[in-house]
Image (cartoon, rainbow, N blue to C red; front, side, top):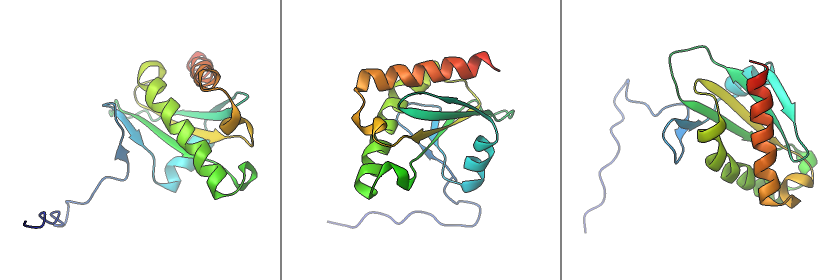
Length: 136
C-alpha cells in the first residue's frame, strides 16, 4: 500500500481562511476579524442563542457562519456540545433561510442551547434569521 500524496504547498496555493460545510455556498468562519465584524453588525436574541448577521457587500454569494460559546456556557464538554448542536441546526436551516452574501455568528447561551428541544432550537434560528432579514 502506498501512502497518499502530500498536498501541494506552493506559494499562492494556501488553504482558504474558511472551510466549506456540507451544503454548497455555506462556509465556516475561522478568522477573528470576521467574528469582530459580525459583532459590530445586527443581532437578534432568542431563548437558545444569539445570532449576529452582517451583509458583507461583496460579490461572493456564499453564506458564511461562525460558532462560539463563552465559558459561561460551562466547561469544555458543555461548550462543545452546545456548538455541535448549533452546527447541526445551521447546516439544516441556513441554506434555506439565510441571505446569500451574509456572515452569521451563532452564540450559545448557558444551559438553554444544550438543553432545548432540537425542534425549538431550529425554530429559534429561523425566527432570528427572519428578524435579521426584516431589518436589512
